[in-house]
Image (tube, rainbow, N blue to C red; front, top):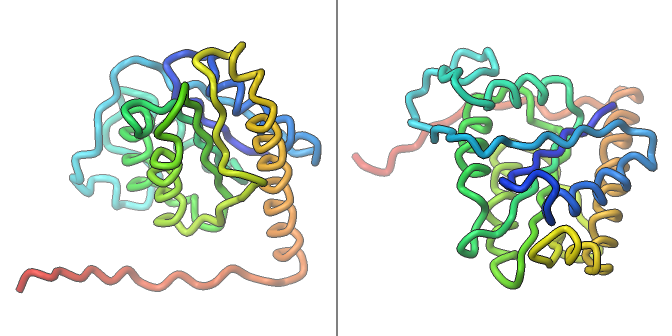
Length: 207
């Protein structure tokens, strides 16, 4: 089993990485493998709602950035953790652009546990977590919880390492995510199948 952790910060080993590393430590305690994948700060296009990905192939039609690499990794992952710094009281634009397209194109997220974490110098953390958690909700992914909202404070990795409460929340989050993954696998082994997916109903309020 494996969990993919996406680092959406342009700073590969900054405070967001510090948070994700603590989550990974909690996951690995349960014997589950982790991979922290750093989203490149290179330009990434946003979703155009072209519906070109609606062919069930788990790919975006645009193949000039990292989105399809991430989609491939998600096919074999058993869980997903999103990590973002707080920019203007919201997630980093790279994270939003990537996840808009991943969520639209993905065919493999339903039923896989997810969690979001964020790092901030000061404020905007809860708004950032709300935005990130919506990706899990629309994809039918159970969301792992912790002892507090999974945020860490610090303008650098060194400062983030001093946020002992934040680090504890990350470790507990990792353990809870691992427990969810193992519980789902145990349920499947006992013959408990996930709910069947209903055919999507599209409602247009304009008549």
